[in-house]
Image (cartoon, rainbow, N blue to C red; front, top):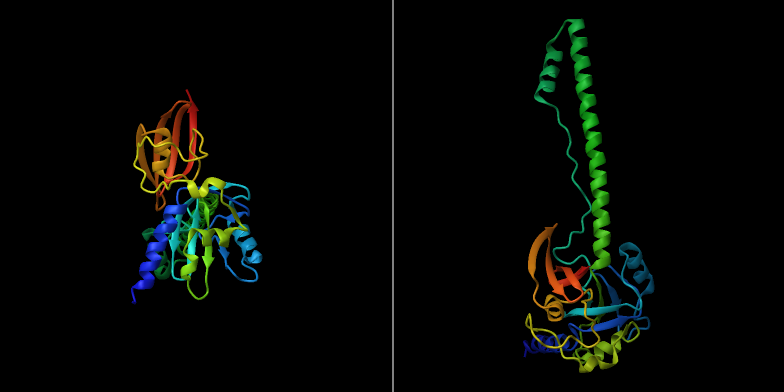
Length: 291
């Protein structure tokens, strides 16, 4: 009996994943570039707190604009909310670099400077004391100049890091958090209930319910592309979906950006060479070079 709610959530989450993940929707409101996303409280007098929503947009930028199409990349059922993640779910998840702080290296006294200070304490000759004091002043000024250069370098590095994070926020997607104060009720764990909760904020295309889920689609399959897709991929697609459209990549490489693993896959398409970049298996950008 104690395991029944957990089992129900697990089964319902699987059903929701099969129905939504890998498919595209059109959002009706701007969505912030953060994992905090948009909080929705079904049944409340005001399901969306527009003041909080505006603050998140201002602080994090707009990752998905009103009217944009976005892919449902993940559905996650938790004890008091259902996450409806789009185009990667929003920047700030585990592994995303969020700190803009760069440590400052401080120039310390050299051994020579410390020896001169010891000599100054022991020296009784006024002329010699003056020479030592002048040399110490020169060394201290040089240390301060080095510290000033370090602070300037750190400030520049922090601005660059802020700019990179801002850009990644705009490319990391967003999410709806469908929240229930007393826990997610069983009746909320159906595709129709999700659509009803998000109806004011998301358009679900007409053939949505008839589309076959793409979860588990094998790489290189000959299955037809998803309904409404073009001959080129769109941001938010999974690796398997891009492979489905463009075929197996000619080459693949990985690199680290902070703690993020970025995978680059190069494809040969009829229109030219397509170079696609994925983060955690989700397409974030691509470029095409014509034949």
